[in-house]
Image (cartoon, rainbow, N blue to C red; front, side, top):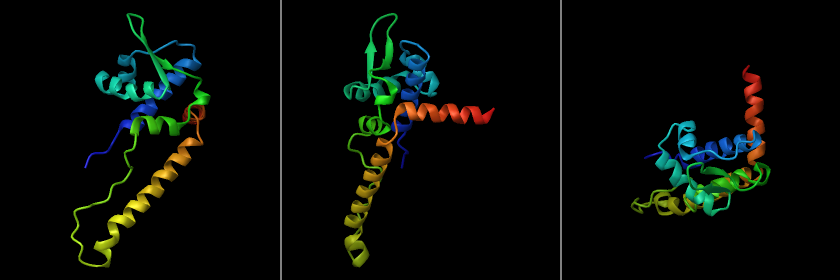
Length: 147
């Protein structure tokens, strides 16, 4: 089983764009974002597509092109980033290949599905309470404590 890194990578990219916005940098290239997340520029560009479709970032083509936030970081919730990058993918998925032999095996798939739905709703509710600007401020606080 592979761990899905789309959301944490997209969040790190969005935080980099929020920092750039706060520091007056107009845009970052996909190569700069890829370097920041220690990933391939192609993967970064693939992650940018749903973020653009959700209206969270905009892209400018050309020699001086790049990516920037579409709106202020205070107007973007972490929930929006999560929904854009993860779509309808569940955080957890149950096994459906279990032979039905007893009380547990006959009902665990539905039970786990309901539990997974509750977890997804809780995650989205929590992420929707925090903005990108809040997260950037938290990073600044952590950085100040580090020194």
